[in-house]
Image (cartoon, rainbow over all chains, first blue to last red; front, side, top):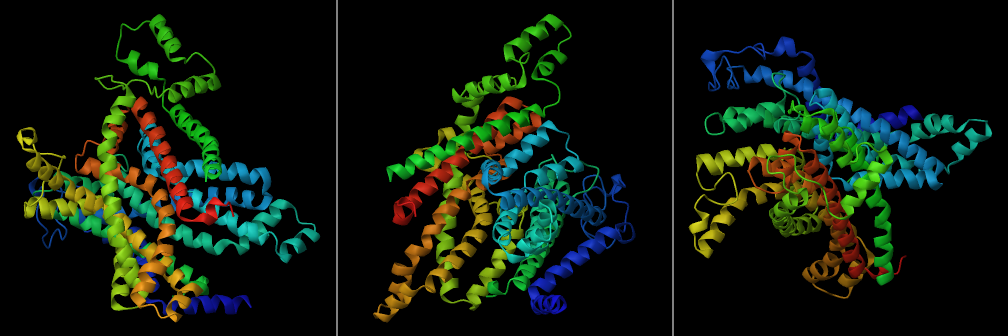
Amino acid sequence: MKETLLSENWRRFRANKLALAGSLVVLLLFIVSLAAPVLAPHDPEAINVKLILSQPSPEHPFGTDQLGRDVLSRMIYGSQISLKVGFVAVGIATLIGIVLGALAGFYRGWVDIVIMRFVDVMLCFPSFFLILAVIAFLEPSIWNIMAVIGLTGWMGVARLVRAEFLSLREREFVLAARAAGAGDMRIIFLHILRNAWAPVVVSATLGVAGAILTESALSFLGIGVQPPTPSWGNILTEGKDNLQIAWWLSLYPGLAILVSVLGFNLLGEGIQAALNPKLRN
Amino acid sequence: MWVYLLKRLLAMIPLLIGITLISFLVIQLAPGSPVDLQTEMNPKASPEARARLEKLYGLDKPLHVQYFLWLSRMLRLDFGRSFSTDARPVADKILERLPITILINVLSLALILAAAVPIGIVSAVRPNSLFDKSTTVFVFIGFATPTFWLALLCMMFFGVHLGWLPISGISSYNADQMGDLAWLWDRTRHLILPVLISAFGGLAGFSRYMRFNMLEVIGQDYITTARAKGLSEMRVILKHALRNALMPVITILGLSVPGLIGGSVIFESIFAIPGMGQLFYQSVMARDYPVIMGALVIGAVLTLVGNLLADVSYALVDPRIRAGR
């Protein structure tokens, strides 16, 4: 039964051209960031004063920046940052969201009230304000960025998981597990969670896209990944500083962000459409 | 209606308390104490002076007492004084910058609605048409475009390359000497790019949502009834369907407030607009803690007010909500 369901879902996913395009983009992104040392034509941090802000050329396809560094190589290494931040931040957010959402949906009552009020309060803060405020107090480092994006982005997952738990906890299989003597934790994390993973996977995939956007905005504002470590956002900062003379510094990193975010979004929507036949059309 | 309003207001109290608690906890993350900032740079500061400052700020008291002291100052809208050289009250600094931020956000919301509603209607009335498909593509691209990058491209194209629009600030250096009309035109030209760009991000979501609502409503029985009694399709869509498809949009308007306030940090610092977002960014860069905390609390309260307004307007247009069903 499980095999056929999986293969049916896979067939639906495969038929969705946009979803396939999305997975291709995500796959490419992984290959580029894993193979960065092989793919990058130059050392991303090698300064060349003779080639400051030079136009794109065969030697430097995306031009050079204000320190004469190769923009293409910096972008290839920048993909590592985007993926790392995207996945770790979403991992943190998903973990918190699952635990809190599961507890609220399973126990209901005052546990639910307290957790959901907490969610409401967190949602009142403009998330970008909250992220910036916390970053202002900590040091801007890649680890802090991941932690802060994760800690301010779990509310949606918590709501999703709670809704799933509220309906799943009434099913027969939960009753059966309880009759067989399973404890609460076993029922929550083994039996119910296994049936609630689909919406979580979708929201996590879309979450990676959001985290990539947030990281690039933070780095662009100078409070994210710090130079000389290349990130798509901080290359764009140099683009802003040289807006009048070096268009290539602004154009290419932004395109890279757009395509990657688009890839994760299409993949997420594709998974959702495949798993939830009701949503087709 | 009044009962509903009262209930809604009472429900805000725990949220307000939660907002202040979280904000207070965020302050506690600050390395060192505010006293360090004032004494570190000053070699003449004696331990006695430090103790005096600590007492002044209430830092010698336990944490929960500090919270209540801070809370009582918040309630009196006393957010303390800025650490920057002007040392002005935080509330003044924020309030004087609020109007321009609100103006830009209201303009961009108006623009979003003016564009998203027709787009949503047309794509829902003809699903899978060429128009519908191209808006779907646009929606995906809109969701994936970093606004600050779009801002850079527009500044480069319209500002630098074509020279049509100014790329920073909200008025020209000689705006003081302009007549009223010239001044208005100057201000408008400065606001075109910021408003268009802050609208772009929201447009994708809103038109998608409008299409979804419209599709839902068109499938309802009363639409079939309206068609059956011989009304023209135009009348069915614009009069019967649109009204009901628009209602949920009110809620989304309320929910979009935090995103808009957060987004203003980005485009205000790109376009050098002297609003709340830019103030927040500058304070973060300067570690001006009182301003950061003040803006954080005010931002959250604005969100709460936005949600309240949305819920109340929804109750006004939908009697079912008022009745509490």
